[in-house]
Length: 160
Image (tube, rainbow, N blue to C red; front, side):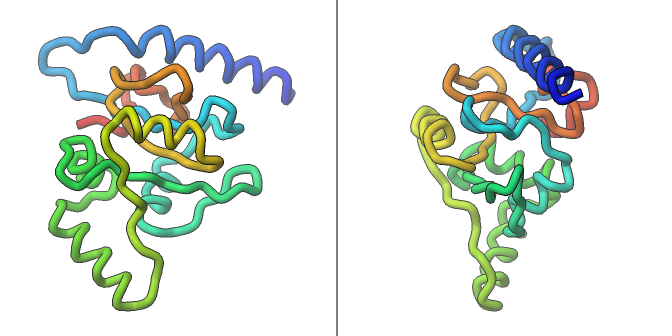
């Protein structure tokens, strides 16, 4: 059964990789691909796990702690990720992290820019996870399925 699951994930990864470069149709919402290092054993997350992780809670995968990385607060990707995945505006997120700091809780995920450096960090830092526009996915990272869906699938939850 494990072999079948692995083979299935390889097929899904190949399909996702082959369709990532396709252009979007007019009016289509832009998918953000959730990415990890190509060598990572992580292949799928739930929307709830993704939200919890980016709200400062610890999320493990296969016994390894995941390290969420953000884009800079001024980027459209970050603002839309916060709105779509976390359900908060930039001002609400700023207040959220200030409140956590006052209470002595963990801080916001580190922000890394520009996008090419961001992807290199995700590719090299063990446990790192990030998000980029689907057209920005590079070869040294892989796309993680969210709720069993790839960015090119109907109903993929991380779109703006």
